[in-house]
View 1: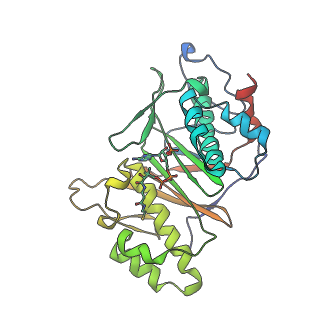
View 2 (view 1 turned 90 degrees about the vertical axis):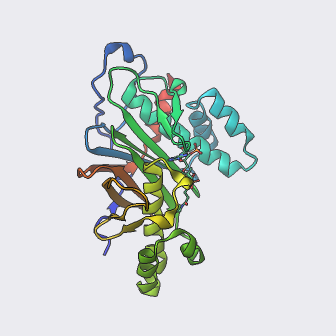
Length: 277
Ligand SMILES: CC(C)(COP(=O)(O)OP(=O)(O)OC[C@H]1O[C@@H](n2cnc3c(N)ncnc32)[C@H](O)[C@@H]1OP(=O)(O)O)[C@@H](O)C(=O)NCCC(=O)NCCS
């Protein structure tokens, strides 16, 4: 059934990093030994399990954040929310620093009309598109070149809240979940949920898009019905993934061109290198 599921590579697979061609004036910061390169029609997906981080690693990651983000992190009352926020934004900044050659703390973002963050890329390098997601104990970041991307991860250890399907799922999606054997129903729910949310985040519309107004299909993973009112069809590429027994996710990319997906756990030593410099 799950033909498009991919598994992460796990920690410790150290490959030599290749970075984008960029003018020397942009190279001011060590890129670190990240294990990815960013190419056309390629998406890099990295995740970070937050529960496994000790206090020192947490502090190191916080050192990659901008002053504004550090201040925001300090305002979280709930320590687990704070840790998740810090890890997610440190991962995002570390990945961007690797491809831009910039200091992670100084990277700037603009925001789309519905709040989607977009990195301000230095002149002379291709547009880098990113999106992040955080959930119970996990952060994930997807990054592409010049193709809008959305990512969603969900914690699936709890039973799926089927009662919200009426509000969030299109009729075809609801029917698919209900028709699934009981043992697969919860998984089917999260497959739809993550694909739909990844799409809503790729378009940048987020909550402003009614999730019932469009439909996705699981096999093959695709946008089955465009949002109502959208006259020009825009194709999207989807890929679901499994991080651990407790977490699944999906990415959505604007455009029909096939994409290669480089997915795996982020290597902490690499992120730590930014702090050490
Ligand atoms: C922000 C939003 C896009 C996702 O929020 P969320 O559910 O808490 O999910 P995630 O953790 O996956 O993503 C949050 C991150 O998305 C990014 N984001 C914010 N607005 C965004 C937008 N309009 N588009 C894409 N990404 C956005 C931010 O980086 C944010 O992280 P931050 O708050 O730490 O800076 C939310 O506005 C939304 O619309 N969610 C859709 C919920 C929904 O209806 N789901 C139904 C699926 S069937």
